[in-house]
Length: 317
Picture 1 (tube, helix red, strand yellow):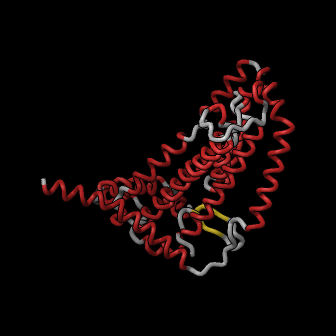
Picture 2 (cartoon, helix red, strand yellow):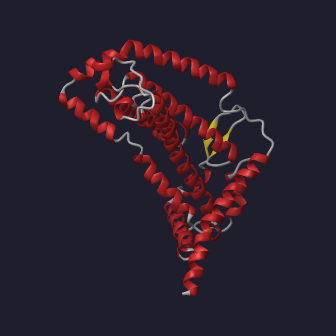
Picture 3 (spheres, one colour):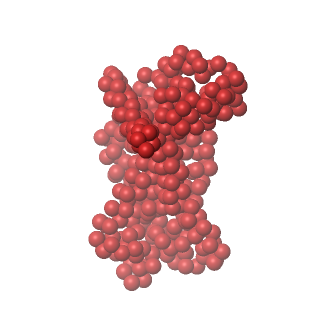
């Protein structure tokens, strides 16, 4: 019994050690001298707000009322397609897998695996945490804004018009502005451009399709959609800047540009042998013992044994 309790206590200490290591890395990165420009200058924020408000107002005045009439006249099959797309705009499609990845990686004993394996999973974990926080953070803020604004949804158009405001009504029919689905779509588009650029066109099309589907199913006005897209994208870009400032998952250029840290991931997926060793390292970290890495050592190319020599290249200042 005492042995079991000791092992459980030891295993529960790994997440704490990992969180401490993450915090220590952020502290070291923030102490480095930097000449990086901020992601958003004050002038950029003001310009973004002014342009966004103007665009939302123009779209709202020009298309909100018209969108209700057009949505009601759409064929039933178009409605079903829009409803199907809306279903995939729910945030759990991103939150659940990203959250599971983060929790699994935090529970590992990473000091026992080779440095390159550890670096690759650290990059994967940081990007998964970014995706989770980009979707969850923007969604929470938008849901708070919905309650404070209380704009009526399209089904209330005949009774109240397109500009009906019922703040703090806490009713679904008065939670139209901004669109939560469109906010998730905007975050997805940002994730495509920042994290997985090979998929950026596909995620751009998917995000815009999800956002447009909310007008098709008469759940939102076009101005709600535009506001959600802008906020989701801007929040995700700001969050990437915060991650870069802490050295988590992103790096910043001297001009303020943000790029995902994927050097160790690219190396680790460079050959089938390295992929096998990568996942063997994950199993070993979760078990807390070097079992699979040792068993697969013969298929490697030697880079995992002397990976400390590569650390500087994988972790640019």
